[in-house]
Length: 361
Image (cartoon, rainbow, N blue to C red; front, side, top):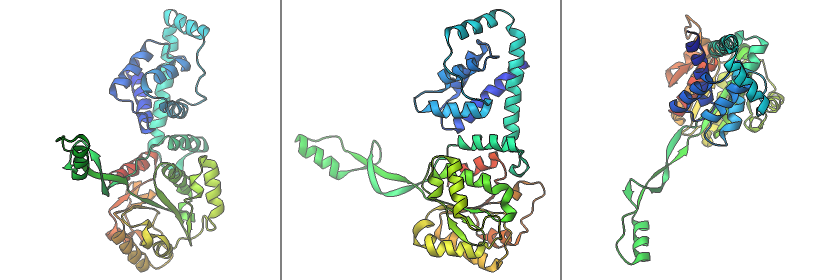
């Protein structure tokens, strides 16, 4: 029972690592669990190096592994173990290691259960320490941009025959050659994030902007904030450091924690950027609770206009994840007929669901 609990915690860490961009398949995870089983799991260093040697397959995986290990187990990743540390671990395994192993298994189970609870917990109810842990878990997310078929074609092993390249090969060799083939290339589809930063969204605005920062660092995206006015913060969120990016975005937004005029701000977005190309064929995500101080009819018209331009429109309402939720807010009622999906976005798990929805768009 105890061993099963430890394995569950280690597999949970491997799952979080996979979400962070490290391609650790079932064989690597099995090797990791088997390696830890032969080590002193009371030593955090042993767990660290067992995972690093079995779960990482290339140099680019190492910094992602360190970030995920720090977020899951806490603290700073251990330094390379010396000879004395290895001897101590070996002696602990030969001697009184059973009690230490039980304590370590309990620690792994507690860490795993805390992370699993945190992933499902409402962001608005998090304590300060939990919010810091959530920031670390957000940082290891690995968004994958949606793709679309491009107009140009690219060389491929399968597909239609490429007459120009085939003829060029025949002229170069002076004899018949195997036909060259081509297929339609793919390109990343644009993504637009519109984040409501009004007073009613205060418990979620910081986490959503951090989420937008992670997305902005890894795919072509436009990010704007919604309130009493529209503010484009794409450039500010391009900063590598999330704290600097959020501070720059906060300085750029003049109506933080103010009112909400979704219809008017959405119209400004469409007139200034959306109609000219930012929203054309894009996946547009609107993060708002739907409380509208303006005219709901104007909001309905603008969402209908947006739906005609965009490839997909997704509305993320944090209150949609609460039991007994009904879409009765004036903004949601006006926009709902023109939306492709209505998601929750109130926890880390639902934000990960949003990333999957965007990827498959």
